[in-house]
Length: 64
Image 1 (cartoon, helix red, strand yellow):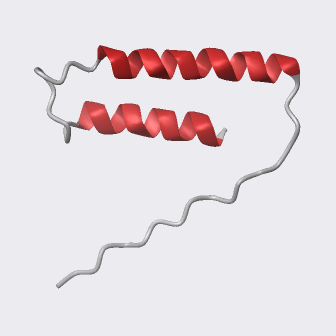
Image 2 (cartoon, rainbow, N blue to C red):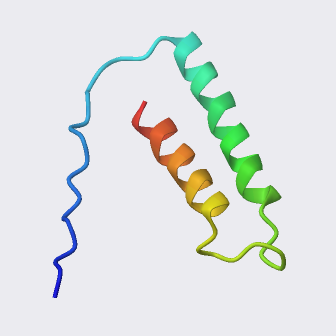
């Protein structure tokens, strides 16, 4: 039986953000939230590629 590759997230960078970076980040997260709200569970399956794409966008936004 094939083993599933273990996921290791990239290291988290600890740094201070400027007020402008914080504002930009909040706006970007709000856009990501809108992407989630636009997913219609009656039309899109939870394992659909579009759902995985939205999840990936959120994950990458948080990491940045």
